[in-house]
Structures are given as C-alpha cells and as structure tokens.
Amino acid sequence: MYQSLEAELHDHFWNSEEDNTSELPLLQTFLKEHPGKTLEIGCGSGRLLLPLIAEGFDVEGMEFSQDMIQLLETSAKEQLLTPKVHHADALEIFDFEHKFHSFLIPAFTIQLFSRGQAHDLLKRLHDSAEKSASLYLTTFIPWAEITGELEEDEWHLDKEITLPNHSAARCETLHTIDRLNQTLHRRHRYSLTSSNGMDTRTHKSEQVIRYYGLPELTLLLEKSGWHLENVITDLDPGMLHPNAHLLTITASAEPS
Ligand SMILES: C[S@@+](CC[C@H](N)C(=O)[O-])C[C@H]1O[C@@H](n2cnc3c(N)ncnc32)[C@H](O)[C@@H]1O
Image 1 (cartoon, helix red, strand yellow):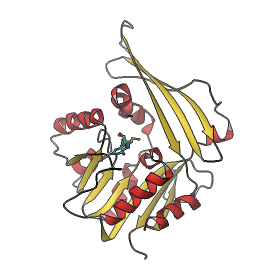
Image 2 (cartoon, rainbow, N blue to C red):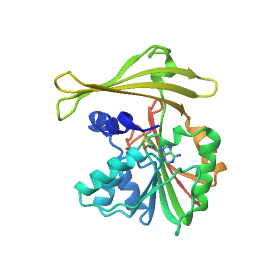
Image 3 (cartoon, rainbow, N blue to C red):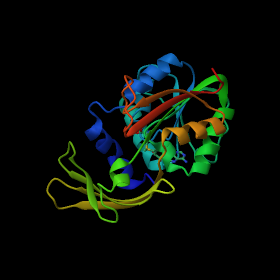
Image 4 (cartoon, rainbow, N blue to C red):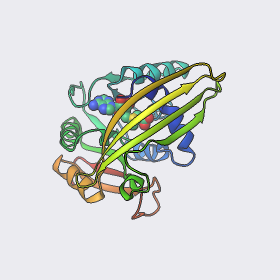
C-alpha cells in the first residue's frame, strides 16, 4: 500500500481536488485550540504535516511506507524543514519517549484499518496521551458506491491530470461493496505517460475501506477511551449536513 506510483501521484491527485476542500484550515484551528506536542498517524508525504510544521506547530509524523517517507524527506529538504518522522507501523510500534497533547488522523487513514485495528489504535493513542489530550480525525462516506450511482465491478476513471512536466497521470478504480459490513474493496490502476507519449509506467494496488456513520464512530471512540467533543461535516464548521460525505470529529481523552 502507498508504494511506487500510488505514492508518487498521491499529492498530485489530492491537490488537483483541493481548492476549498483542504483539511488544513480545520487542522490549524484544532491545533490553535489544542496546543502542544502532536502526532499525525499516516503522515504520508507530509502534504499536511509540512505546512503545519512550517507554521510553527509542534507536530511529529508516523508513517510506514518508505516511498511516502522518501517524498516527505525530499519536500522537507526543499522547504528547509526538519520534521521528526517515525518510520513505523501504527498497528505495531508504539513506544515514545513522551506523551502527546494531541493526535491527528486526517484524510481517511483510520478507514484503512479493520474495525478491531481502529479500536486498538485509538486505545493505544489514548494510552500515549496527556491527561487533557485531544484527537482529530476525518472519515468519508462513499455515497456513490453505497447508492450504486457508481457501478460495482467495473473500471471507472477516477482521476486524470497533467503534471507540471506535461506527463499524463491516471487512476482507474474498480470496487465491490459489502453494505452489511460497511466495507468497500477498491482496486486501483495507476498510469503515468511521458509528455511525448513514448513511455508509460503502471502500478496496481488494492485497498479495503471501512466506512462509519456518526453513531458507530462515537461508540468506537467511547470504547477506546475518547469522548466526542465536536462534529464537522464536509469540512464546513458552520452547520451539520445530514448527507455529508466527510465527517470530521474531535474528541478529548477525558470527559468534559
Ligand atoms: C490516505 S493517506 C494520507 C496521507 C497524509 N495524511 C495526507 O493527508 O496526505 C494514508 C497514509 O497512511 C499510511 N498508513 C496506512 N496504514 C499505516 C500504518 N499501519 N502505520 C503507519 N502508516 C500507515 C499510508 O502509507 C499513507 O501514507
């Protein structure tokens, strides 16, 4: 997972969709309200981590893909930043020399874990948290797949962009969905074709995504020791959208 072209194209695809859908403003607000030592689980190439560090927030990263870490190190060097990144599997290693004031799990990373793994991870974060610590996480609900608007078992063009060097990047996706267990299985085909069309690299990957409604997410947090503090839908702190695609929650390590 998150190797080769999937890693290389990750930020290009996210940034092409970003406009007003970036999580950065929410993360900045959260960290201003919850200052102190912070850990981002699954920090990837530093897409969110590096801008936060550049602003002076005290955030460390944890990431298990060597390819993603390589990209992060290159960007950090270009920006003259020196992030502290733990190259580790969040499901296995959890041994820090200090406790954290907050944890970030943006960009749906929690959905890559089985429900049991998500519970274990959240519990271990709670064990590594300062007493008044806080948690921020974002999940998405795949409505197009749930409603059948996006047909199952067929390849769909998911993303297609031209990179600054004029090569063409594509991601095609085929999915199956288990609505009873709220699990989405996705296969991805990535391709990158040089600007003269002569050279194409390809990469395939598979992902299992678990999706959650708010009641289940709240129960998962409570069972792991966290207490729901705030809910934001579709990255809009203004009002709750009942049919939202994106669910951001913040929680505290002790009841308010
Ligand atoms: C959807 S990407 C998000 C990356 C980054 N947070 C961002 O917003 O650009 C999920 C990231 O989590 C990492 N990841 C997944 N499972 C992990 C695990 N068990 N331990 C550490 N990192 C993990 C993946 O390698 C990937 O970089």
